[in-house]
View 1 (cartoon, rainbow, N blue to C red):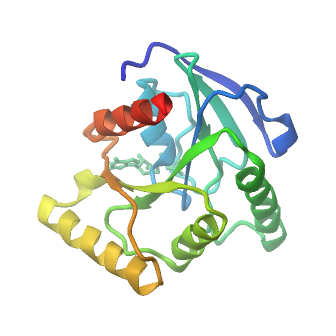
View 2 (view 1 turned 60 degrees about the horizontal axis):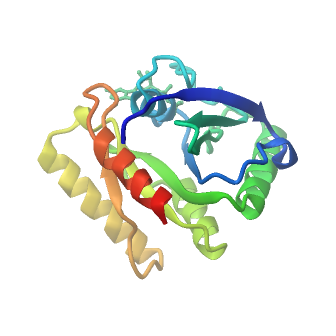
Length: 198
Ligand code: GDP
């Protein structure tokens, strides 16, 4: 897919204020600092569409971006950042939960995990929430430039095994990306393009 336009539309914490358009929507989520903003910027070829920072826990809103006037890319708050106060984390969860349970346009959610790490409890809990609510998701292994290919293959297998051990009957498709090397971009965009056709 060629990216012709990528525009910021709106940020909020209220599902009712999300855009009304019924074009297909794809959400990106993961633990804070997983490389979500860098990945989004790499996907749409813009340096600053999503904010990147070394400081975890910064994006705390549902951010809608309209791509090619055809689909929404949604940047969701990072989860599992320990230093956010408990009450605030609860607020995240409520509006994130509400987003997932009510957003009919949502076609697929991309759950980002750092290629270097095993799935954390919070990742498994989040995927369970998606599974239990019938919300389709795929996985993205980020920052793949930080590992040799063999180590990535090994970590993919560890991740799959952990999901199977956690009760999943099958493991979703896993994309591998690096914002630094700009790799994995075409696969992901082509996948979205295929889903857009359905
Ligand atoms: P977010 O909090 O999930 O949005 O993560 P950011 O995109 O802000 O990235 C967090 C940190 O990881 C920053 O210091 C980025 O420079 C770094 N980072 C993000 N993506 C990559 C990548 O693909 N490779 C490498 N080596 N570092 C990355």
